[in-house]
Image (cartoon, rainbow, N blue to C red; front, top):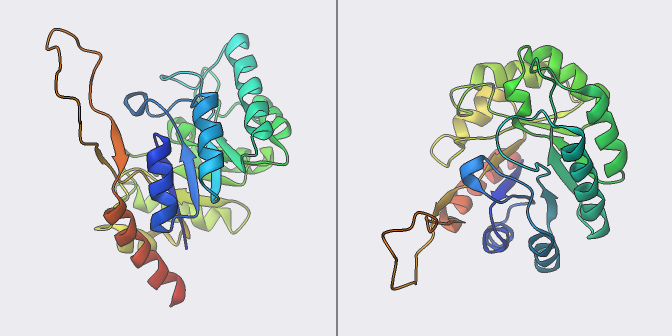
Length: 242
């Protein structure tokens, strides 16, 4: 049983390792669902944590259909992650009809090698999840991060269980979105998955004493909740030992 933490900053990555997680998906911009972190963020995080580090490779928010310039950015960011000693990346690309862009995904896997590649929740935007799963396996990804095509993994539990069965050990199905200590046991039992993904995020305390109410670009930032991560890991560790 393994827990991956979606960390939106270096501080959350350090908390994830301290709590006992085995992998970090490093992102920026939680409001956009996560975008590629900066060079400095990746470099500092790689130097500060020893667990597996998978930066998300996503040049912008919105859909996962990219033009040639954006795809060139994706390539450069992948090569940068390799240069900085990351263990893998989390990414995904689709066509205008929502299907997985297998040609581009295969190229991504080639560029990333020997790093691993997680196909992220672009999977949840595909019209036929069972077909998409076979395509992602064919492209050489090592896992799929998915909420079972629902807004949260608990809501998508039925499909998640079907995906685990169809994968049959050929690829890892990793439930994510809305995974918490209150539902992790039911997700283990209901899906048969062995890897899970959570941000367990809370609003970080703000030490700044003055805010200008006339500006809108100073919203909250988030940090991982260490106690919540420990509760999730306690359940996972018990399940793994039984």
